[in-house]
Each structure stands twice: as structure tokens, then as C-alpha cells.
Length: 306
Image: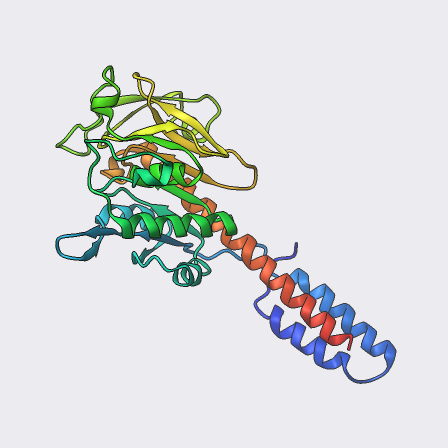
């Protein structure tokens, strides 16, 4: 493909105008120039900073939407432009917003996924359920599936992703998995508290530079059965799933049970994960805009043929 030319659209418009007058030979030449102008589509049409949507949290006591700053800062440092998504569970709203995005991040939450979503009654130690977060994330995931948007899912986000894909959750590790290691480390939140074994050949193993990583841990629920088109790629010593990756070719999706956004500046694996996620969003942006431009050129060609 030729180097980008900023006047590509103007040239197409000129050739289209010329194609409507003069001899048949002249018209044919002008139509050919319209077709050739497709080469003027930028070799890289992606946004300089891909737009990354991040769903927010819901504070029930004050009816506020909020989000820890580290999610947005990690995305921005990796080259993305974070966009906060209000928890408004209306399909038309989610569709209109995600139409403009290049990737989505589902963060953690001070809540548990409603077990009714995966066919279970509430366990005695089930935590608080925030319906606005559940419903909004479910709509976001449906739109991600429809559009093929890159996804990074963290902690609660990982669990919701798994549930939407038909998987199930352990509702309380402490009472349901007696042999489990400690998964709620407390303060300081950024301290790596346990190891995760990573599947060889997985994206996470590539980013970690090996098949083991030290991570923080702040969850009392865990993946029980893995959802459709997802592959478990990380486990703790007690056998609990700590990471999932999208299985289908042509799609980018990674979910981790730990919090890579916490003290991401000091964590090489976290920085690599955010960088790879933003790179996938940038690639998506470029592919989408190339398709849009090519469709526009074909419309011009059809118009010139009339």
C-alpha cells in the first residue's frame, strides 16, 4: 500500500465529479482514478489513542457511580484514551457508546455476580449484589461479542465475562474450597501475595516471560466451570482458575482474577498486559476505519457509474 496521502478523499471527490461529464473514454478514465484512490487510504488508519470504555462502580449508599483512578491511568499510560461508562442498563445507550469505542475494560467491583445468572441459589456468604453493574456489564459484553471488540476483564469483570459465556462461579472460596490458599490478602493491596501458574504458549505466559507470576489477590469468589470459547490459562496452587483467554481466532480477550491496575507502574506483567490490550484496540480501530473508508469508496464508484 502506498504511503498515506491526506488529500485522498478530495481526489476521490474530484474524480467522481469529472466522471459525470465528457466523453465515454474520459468517464472511464475518471472511474479508474476513483478505484486507484483506494490506495490513498492510510496504511495505518487507527486512532493515535484508541478509545477504551471502562464500566464504573455503583455505591449503593450514596447512589454514586465511581471508579478507582488506577484503571484509567494504566490505560492512558499504555497509549489509550479512557472513557468512563455510566451504569445505565439500556441497550440503546450501550450500543451507541460502544459504536465509538475501540476496546472495553470491565473492572473489579465491591459486589458479587448475582448467582441467579448462572442458575444457582444465593450462598449464605454471598456478598452484596449490584444489579446496575450486573445488567450494564451484561449488555456491554453482548455488544463486545457482536462487534468483536478487544476486552480486558479484571476480577469481577472476569467473573461476569465467564458467567455471560455460560460458566459458573464458586460463591465463597472460604466455605466451599477448604484447602484453598488465602485469596483475600488485605492491605497493602499492591503486595504480590501468591503465585499463578500460567499455561505454556498463552498470552499471559508470553508477557510474564515464563509460566509463573506473582500477583496480588482480592476476591472471595472464583471461576467454577469455564464458559464457552474461553480457555483457562492461569491457576493458583489450590487449583482455582486465575485467568481466562478468548479461544477464537480473530478476537482478543483476556481476563485475570488479580488486579494489574494496582501499582501497575512497578509491575512489568501489568504494564505488558495493558500495553498489549491497547495495541489490540489500536489494531481494531485501524481495521474498522479501513473497512469504513473502503465502503465509502465503493459507494463513490457506484455513484460514478450511474
